[in-house]
Image 1 (spheres, rainbow, N blue to C red):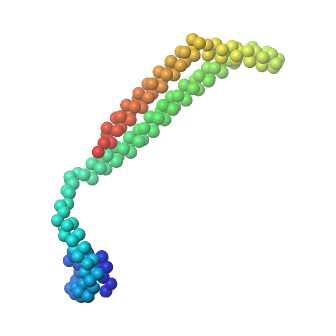
Image 2: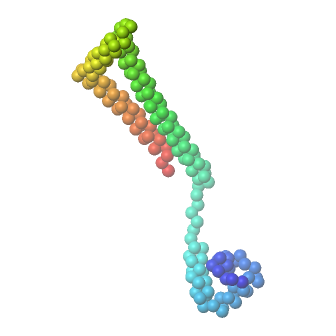
Image 3: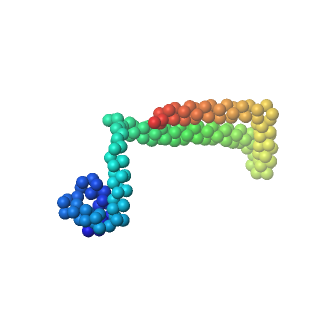
Length: 169
């Protein structure tokens, strides 16, 4: 029989039959190197056998699984929240683009001459954007956009803070 660490550990644990025990004893008597290895394993075995096993609570598994489910639920809620915010900004962007196009197209006269129509459209577009981005209105747009970003950041922060509290172990 080839004596290795696995067999020596089984010998220390008392998991060998009488024939295997006799073979291990003979091998230990015949080999000083194997005897040294056995002594080291024996010391480790004695130290480990004196160690007390930590006991877990009876509902430990349930608590861990609950925290995993909460984390998964939190990640899904986070995705839904971010998609909702992106959808909200998309709708606002489409509304602004639609409003701009409506304002531009409503000022174009309905003439048959395409050159006059393009010139008129260009002038109307220039006037519209000049008026839209005047000093007073650009400040108003910046303020509204800043307010929307601050409110969104606040809700995102609160959502993250709430999710983090539920996930602490």
